[in-house]
Length: 386
Length: 206
Image (tube, each protein chain N blue to C red):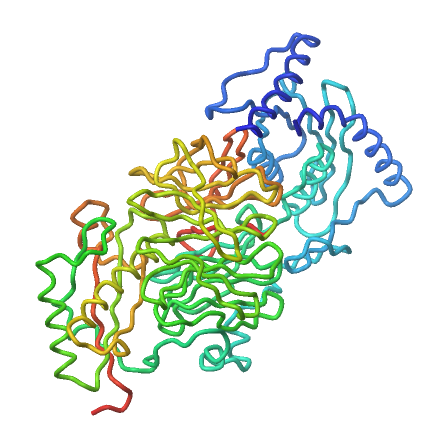
């Protein structure tokens, strides 16, 4: 709540000043509620480059309008190489003026938007990657793509179920595969493709979560007769059972300092998010007032918020302060994963019989589905590399 | 606050931009993109358009020398040793048990089915059983994977209570990944919330 309110204040102040000085009415016709977007206009850039530009900016809280109503005026050309210029119409400052070459035009636009975000003191995200579970025929495989779904590639070809991908740094993936006839956890080096079984206890080995410092792995195991939360070192040593409950635990995630594990649980018939020290102890409830039946938590990299899925007949993406409190219900969706800059969420959304990935700018609730991902007919369980 | 700061800092941005523009004029007017290290972010250099294509696929390297058996040797834990046993999902299909929404309780009407499976195992001493837990689509992915496992474990518990050796009962959860009915009605959901029995026999047995 604090994040959203303060951002609101900042934006409101800047827009108020803008409107007063320039006698311009900012349009209020955004279909999605929440904080006002930052208005931008674009000229001279067309085709695929424009589509990429719009997508990249929409999912970071920018909306497009005509030049008279825009705070930032983007102009340029994209004939093979992108040349872009951004002017702040409030301060009249030239924010960015750059030319790009190499790679694809798509990538050049990503770099341009990243440079823009850097000028706005935001950590850029347009050249990051996401992993997800993609449905292929009757099976599912683990895929990796650009943050916007482009260049999707499967990293498994197990012809069975593969699920629950989780990055371990930027070059290694943990996931569950049924390749060896059980639900086992594997780790795979994305540089040379080599992989190994990580956890193959009796029963199901589920929901791996690697700590941000890459020192530990939390997971759900059933080897002791019920599904409980376990943690061990990244080399597999020091397995510790953290919960011993007749109820259930699922979907562990880590605090950014790698000290706590947050997970979904049910105790005394009450579903709640809980957190527990990675070295053991008593789990404490993280209150999610207004976010019913919380599950699939993901702790923001800046430590301030936990995003989760609320199950109420349909599924909603919610955000709550990491210490617990009032949950903010954002949009329909499942399984949120934070961007490296703690502002955008990647989640999955049900459409007909499948799922699509969707990117959501938390402060403005601006969101865009990723409509065309090649290689799979349904995409879910996103994990953002960060 | 970030946005407000950003506005304030645009002056700085302007300075930086001027610096960048100045730089641009000295060079060719082109800013090279950082190289896409496979998944790194810090590499620099010329962009390689094929960088994404470098991603190795698991199977290619598997065929390059890592077999399933090799993969299985690594890691922690020891799965039950029925990996290469022959699976028969048909023999006990009639004994499939069904669950209420979000429940792991075996309904009284279904307890006789578990009893039949226990009898089968007593009459086929060389066989083992895999109990597969499944869910409907209403929970989330990993919640359901965990719920399906608990359904399988609840059935396993009853089999053990009926005298079956625990080492003969494997459990496996498919969560919501393997519905028998892909509809979205309660009738479809009810069919999908189930525990199935797969008979396992050692390779080479009769």
